[in-house]
Image 1 (cartoon, rainbow, N blue to C red):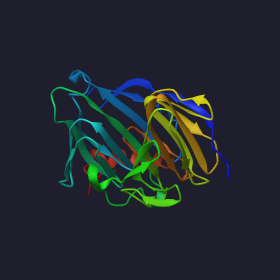
Image 2 (image 1 turned 180 degrees about the vertical axis):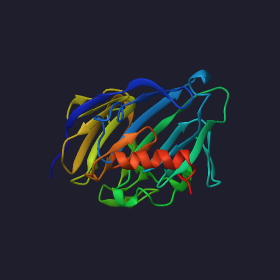
Image 3 (image 1 turned 135 degrees about the vertical axis):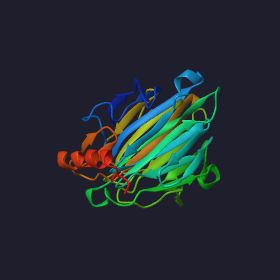
Image 4 (image 1 turned 45 degrees about the vertical axis):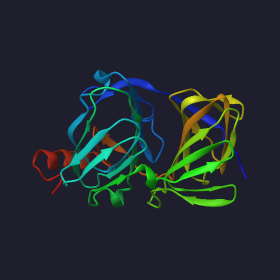
Length: 281
């Protein structure tokens, strides 16, 4: 058994996306700042409506999946397939762009806190042109695992906690992703299994915590070394942190905005398909 430690720190960079939504971006700040199979990780959180009210009007995607986790707030998803989904406190939307999808994500509130995360998960070449899909995951569909000194919301993947196996709301897939929201009470400690061969990170977004006595920085991606487990320890205020892990794809990544393919030629084809109305055909 090998314990993972922190290999690299990627602080969140303040930026904006969509029609001006303020976000903190770790993965995806630059093409070189990724963690295969993850392309981008954004945190959004503000009680100022001007930071989020313009939302993400209709836009296209091809070649990957988006996972939106709402901690607090209300946003509406709509896409060209006719899907509609209300994303509320504790809910998740898992969208597979595949060969092409055009969607919007618009706030359904004019005031108050809107807070959550969006993760971009790459697809292997063999799956980039599959049919688009969308899943609206309600809070009560996400297992909430009680642990000594806290709890774990298991959005995706499988974890064995205290000798008992648990399955998330989403399982399987080529990259076998793990996405867990870990809540620890003050001074609590948890050993989390992480499959060997998976790339993994921790993202602290509330309180204070450490890995092997190394404090975690708030709103930053902490890339972990190889191993089969990681020990997370909360400080005197407790902590909430995301554990995100996945099996690397190991293929070339060529990205142009909302399109992620394996070659420049495929990107040019995606742009042409979008201009000529064939992206979603």
